[in-house]
Every structure is written in structure tokens, then in C-alpha cells.
Length: 540
Image 1 (cartoon, rainbow, N blue to C red):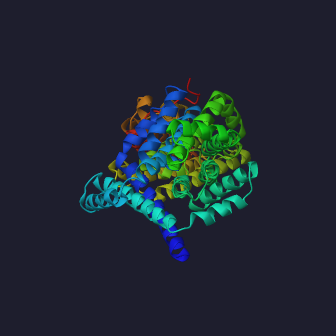
Image 2: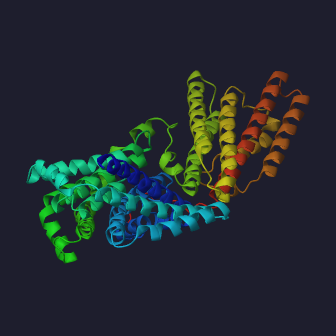
Image 3: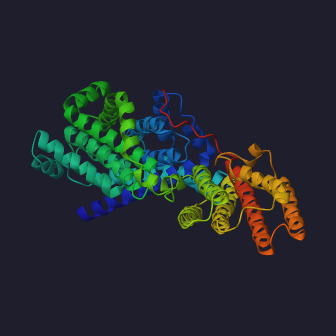
């Protein structure tokens, strides 16, 4: 009997996790750009960002997914850190909805009556649907599997003798030591399952089955809240500075909220029982209230200090990226988790890549050939090569999810990388070319040179339209400069070897201009669907 209960317990958790994963992934894809737009608009105030975090987490049923997406939005420049911190706080409150679903639906209703129709309709949409139908079907299947897992967990606990488990609970001691032991149990469960929602489902189901006393179950709820920070910590491995800052804000909030909830646990538990009007019957509902109150307490304690927290995090991280321009500022796993978000992050990173390539090109065009300058250009070209390779690897791992905007954007991203790498390589080649034509060719040559400078000069997030030039104007300026050089060479005003060098230089400048135009076209195509980045200041 014990072995059967153990198998059912593990299987129930597996079904629950599978349902959560399917539901979260399906809802993210089905929402399409709506999730992206909703988070991107969370800029009015801290309270608005907080409310957005609650709403989005309630919709996708995964605080980890929302926090991961929020990290990606900071990377993509769509949220600043102050706004992202508010969303993170709200996500922790929004995840309490899972506790309420388990408490209110999981024990009074035949869960198979909910699960089976959801799985049937979901599979029909998943297999036969078009556009967002498969994603919505996946979410419905996940919803059904979620309840099937919960039903299996209920059955597993029903076969276990509560007296034996209660004896184990009593063996953990009493008072603060007992609370600490069960807090650690909640943390370990969450770490093992990588889902606070699953740990909470186990806790609430065990408590409702009479296997855990109220205080021990409440401590496990606190432990699950603290344990969910492991997802954020794992997200910081090899991540950008923006990702690390947002993840650490998540850790700070959950640890502060957890410590406060443990210190105030007797009073919070009494308040929860008073709200439910029940001191022993439906413990799962009391725990859902406790879960909500503990997160509200954390928000009340941490929200007033958001400005100081943001300032500390802004100064704490970023040295690695500042020291190495080839380190990505916007691309990491958090951005790749949401296809539309990945395009925004790509647009921002490719803007940086274009700026690095243009900087090298302008440096090569303006300076004289020296060993130091050549070494500097070689370093710049190497940085462009490395960052471009990182962008290509990011694109190769990205799943478009059937989104036409993403599918169309990925080839453009590859073209931009190729153009920037070519521009940096041409800059290195240009460094050794002569730059002084004969006096008779000076005017046309200088006009062409100035034209190339205007093409190379725009900021990374501007298009070539800002220069008032197009490729036809570049070609015409090049033809005039080349004609003037050839005339001067025919008249004997320029030695043959110097003429060849000047013509080569003009050809290199022309090719650099073409690559700059190609990169600008690709970045413009990527940004057609991207909202404007927010200012890098905290929301009022």
C-alpha cells in the first residue's frame, strides 16, 4: 500500500508539473503580442507595474515564466529596472492564485469532470487548429492535466495513515525549530520540482488530508515561496547585467517576505483563520489566505524601499559588460523564452553591433596608419565578430512558435550580422590605404568621403532616412569621385601606384556604405513591430 501511494504521489506531481508547463507555454504563445504589450505598458507607476505582474501571472499561471519574461523585457529595453521590480513583486502575489484554485476547486468537485473535457477539446484544437488554435489547445490540455495530477495527489494522500505522518511532524520538535524544519522542507520540495506551485499543491493537499498541522503547513508555504527564487538564480548564470539585477530583486523580495512571514506566522495564521471563519475544517483555504497575506506583507515591507534597491542593483552589476564590448547586453535565455520578446532583444543587440562596426569604420576612415591604430581596429573587428557570432547562435536556438513576425525577422537578423561583420572587416582593410588625392580631384573625393561619413554616423536605433541619403546618392558620389581620380591620373597629377591605392580606398568606402545601408534595412525591418524602448529611469 505504501509503495502504491508513493508511485501515485510521484505520478501526481509529474502530471501536475506537466500540466503547469503545457498551460504556461500554451498561454504565452496564444497571447502572442498581447503579453508583450501588456508588460511593455507597465510604465505608469510602481502600483501599475505591481498590478500588471499580478494580472499576467494569474493569466499564465507561472510566476517563474513571468519573471523570466520580465528579465527579458529589461534586456530588450522595454522596461527599466524600477518598473521590472514592480512586476516581479506583483508576480509573487499573482502566483497565489494557484493556491486558491487548489483550495477552492480541488476538494469539493470531481476533478475528472473538469479535466477530461478540457483535455478532449484541447487536443482537438491542438491537432486541427490554425493560427493560435494549437497554442490555445495546448493550454487547455495543460489545464486538464493540471487537475488530473491534483486528483492523483488527493488519492495518494488518501491511502496514507495521517497519524504516522503527524508523528513525524511532532518529531521535528516544537516552536521555532519546528517551523524552521518545515520551511526547509518547503524549500527542498520547490528546488526538487522547480515549481513553487507544485510544492504548494502538495502542501495544501497534505494539509487538507489531515497529514500536516496548520503551523507546519504554513511554514512549508513560506519555504515554497523562498525556494522559487532558485529559478531566478539559475537564470543569472551567464546572463546579462539586466537579468542579474532583476533576478536578485526577486531573491531579495522573497527572502524578506519569507523571513517576515516566519516571524509573524502565528499572527498571520490567526488572521487567516479569522478571514475564513474556520479554525480546523478547511485548512487548505486557510493556507491560501495565509499565502496571500504573507506576500502582501512582503510587498508592504519592500515596496517603499524600491528606489534604494534599484540604485544598489544598478551600481552592483554591469562591470563585466562595460569592460568587454563583445559581451551581449540584451541576449540571454530569458529573452529567448518569448519569441516576440526575442525579436525586440535582437533589435537592441544588433543596434549595438552596428554601433561597434560603425565606430571601427569611422576610425579607419579618419585616422592615419599606425601600429597602435591598426591593433585597435583589429580589437574592434574581433569584438564585432564575437558579438555577431553570439547573435547568430541566439537566432539558431530561437523557436518562432509560428509567429510570422518572428519568422520574417530571423533572416533579417542574420543579414544584419553579416553586414556588420563585413563592415568591420572592411574597416580593418581600409586602415592602410592612402587618403590624399590630387588637388583637382579633391572636391569630388571629399564630397564622396563626406557622404560615406553621413551613412556611417547615425546612432544604432536610427534609420538611414535620418541622413537624407539613399544608395543611389552614394553610388553617384562614388562615380564622381572615381571619375575625378581617373582624370587626375590621366593628366599625370597622381602617380599610378597612388592612383591605384586611392581607387581601392574609394571602392572600400563604397562597399562600407553599402554594408551600412544593408544593416540599416535589416534593423528597420526588425523594429517595425517593436515598441519604443523606455527611458532608463525609474517610473515615478
